[in-house]
Amino acid sequence: MTTVIKLRKVGNSLGFTLPKEEVQYLRASDGDELAVIRTENGLEITPYDQEFEMKLKAFEKSRRKYRNALRELAK
Image (tube, rainbow, N blue to C red):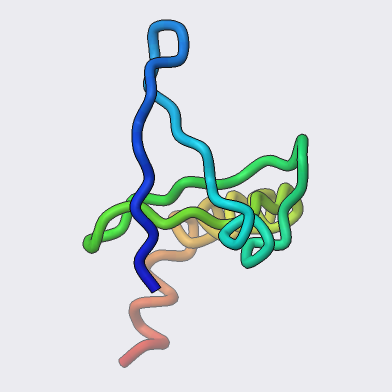
């Protein structure tokens, strides 16, 4: 489903509001944080999960450390 939204000036930035249906789809509510992720198709908006973010950072750290071993295991 495609939803068209309009950008509006908010201070020195631009912002938009999400329709009620889209907020319900995200299972978000007032005060929740959303993550905006750049993808090759554009931007992806998802609920922000701080625990997942910490796990992702830990993975990135270990991935760099064990890069060569992971490459060998992938063969």
